[in-house]
Image 1: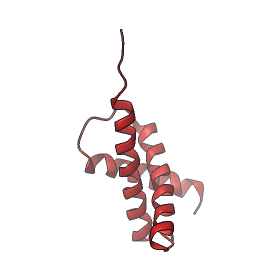
Image 2: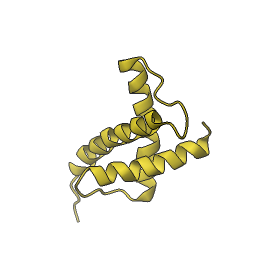
Image 3: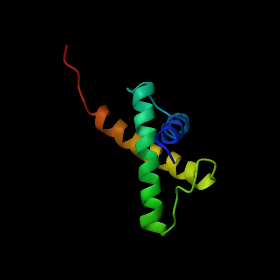
Image 4: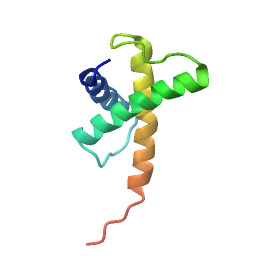
Length: 90
């Protein structure tokens, strides 16, 4: 898949991950896209390492979307844990 396909999958997977995980996120659209793209890569890698399957077969394959969404949820939760601990001093 090309980089444009990854950005599209990442954007949608990041939005779906935000919808599936309740709570307030400090990031906007750009952060959502980056988390989604990185989550897709993470999900594909985890699928290959843990289950020995090629998780990213193509744009319209269900396994690609499931891997991207699961990876995005994992990264979103990590992002929330890291940014939630920050304190802002005014």
